[in-house]
Image (cartoon, rainbow, N blue to C red; front, side, top):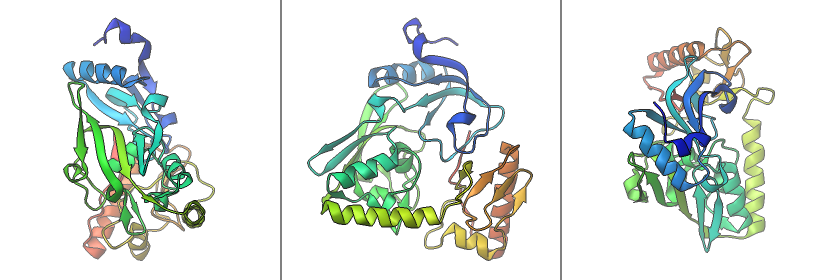
Length: 292
């Protein structure tokens, strides 16, 4: 297919995806676009839908596993300034979906607004964090979401409230929707106290992460009330390896892609761990990774 001539400047073909995802694995996207404003995004979305192309939104790439065959559709990056802006209005933070979650946390803390600081150190974009309803310390991001702007297949946009987003433990009703913008309703707090809490949480979170590995991902969602890390440890699966892919020996909630790692090795290891945990505990670990 071909896009409208005036969109040619932002559509790239056979764009490598491995440099854009944390695991560093995978083939190219058939089409790739990084719209510079909402109007371009709407047009690209509409034309791709009309052509029957599958569409994926790429945020920070921290929870994406791309197969070596690549993605036979359109990948849209929201990294441009217009789709990753952060703005404070009274006690609200308005965040473009492409903004890094870490930047949103720092921005809100600096403005003396509490409600996101417990999420410091969690990788990825605001959009991805909201779709997956990320949590830490028993509190999820959905608890402070006021509204979400999403894009429809025809390129039009609509706003969902917190209830319509369907927030529950590490999931929402937003899968398959393109999130454009999120408004968080936060609480005024003392900047100094917030900063100290954020720094303490940052140190704690970094201590629980493999320190010398760069190509990592967290493949599993923590079951309600039980960290995946504990389950995997108790099942004797810490450090388990499949080819050039392994779980970290000390922090087995992390999957590590070593040199030569492939998507098939990742998937085999993930399935192996899920089978063993289910067999030993009766708990069916759910995937945190998106498989493209």
